[in-house]
Image (cartoon, rainbow, N blue to C red):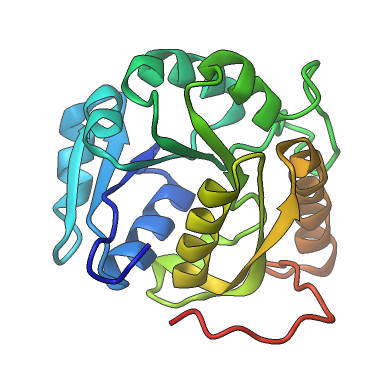
Length: 221
């Protein structure tokens, strides 16, 4: 993605904690962002809280308007949200950030029958979507405060160009985007989210993340 042709980013679930944090980070980095919600009124109201570059739509409208579509809804709404926007995202890069958390035991790994949320998305959206899985382990608090997250973002895809595009977006809001390989490997990052929740609770911290050692630091700019 060049600096002169940044994509419009639609965030399905954009009024939640992670969606709001990502929207703040990407808007600050110069991207146009469309917040998606089941209620267009709620999305428009939420978008008005940002200084510039952020608009609101219902989920279908956001998916239609976005060049890149990011899914950040709760796992309980995941399949329904994907079915709702399926027709609008064909041919587009879709970044699925959903983690299969099952309340109330969110600090215990509980994977779905498909094996991962990413594979659920692949089954529902089909081969016409350029699917990426990322942003599972990124804390929203610093993003919402206008800061970059102090962690690496693992990115998974079977589409190399889509993976690189998602890494660019990760570089804009976090320490660094790191390729984790194929979409099937997403299960590791999805499961790690419950581990990080446990760490946050056990050590009474907020926003524990991961960093990959052995790689040279990369300048996201």
